[in-house]
Amino acid sequence: MAKEANNTIAQNKKAYHEYFVIESFETGIELCGTEVKSVRQGKVNLKDAWCTIEKGELFVKGMHISPYEQGNIFNKDPMRVRKLLMHRREIMRLFGQVKQEGYSLIPLALYFKGSRVKLKLGLCKGKKNYDKRADMAEKTAKRDIQRAIKERNR
Image 1 (cartoon, rainbow, N blue to C red):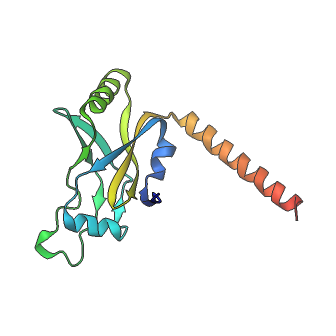
Image 2 (cartoon, one colour):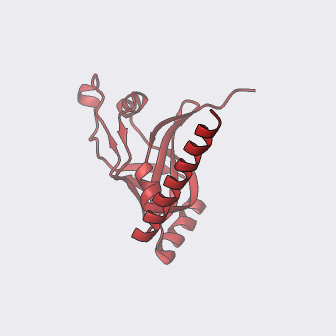
């Protein structure tokens, strides 16, 4: 039985602050050779990335993969639009939810699954400012509780 290693390359921590993640999906991503080498070095930025559905296909925009240093003429544009690989019925279901209910498709993480690069895609709903403040207060309270417990156990 082979061990499935999920090696996270990049995470979009800003997405968890800006959005409620309703559901998440695993998608493949179409990359060229020098992009994969750059991804292996961890030179990926998901912070301002988002996904769109055009003509029944899923694309990620705003994802930055730095050019591979030894790539010369084979390097692609770092901000190019990349196609995501998902089953058509899943894409159509997402398309319906995005159009009707006002959800957004946001890349949450990029990781290796075996030798393949996978993207964790989130179906998200935007947070209001008061939601963000409440989350920050809750996070601070949990941190304070953990600190107090740690101090008491010493």
